Image 1: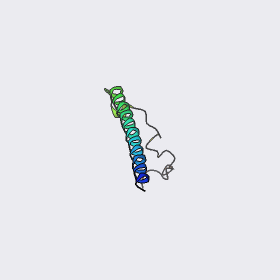
Image 2: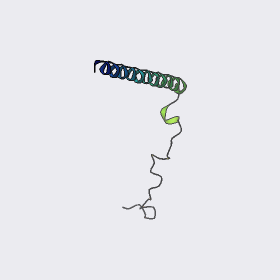
Image 3: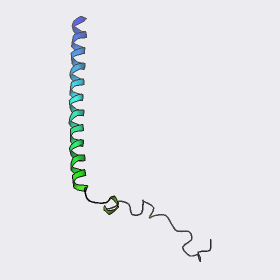
Length: 72
């Protein structure tokens, strides 16, 4: 019974170590991407970048007052 407990604890420790290593790699990759992104975006205004989705994603809304004289 003690052998089984030691085996389980070692497997859990190995799993935790693997996950910690994976998280560290992910964080490092994200930090590198952020660093590359900030260096490539320097000198440009946020409004100068290409927008995805037109005018805030509202281009599909219909204009209900398009045919009125504007006295609404």
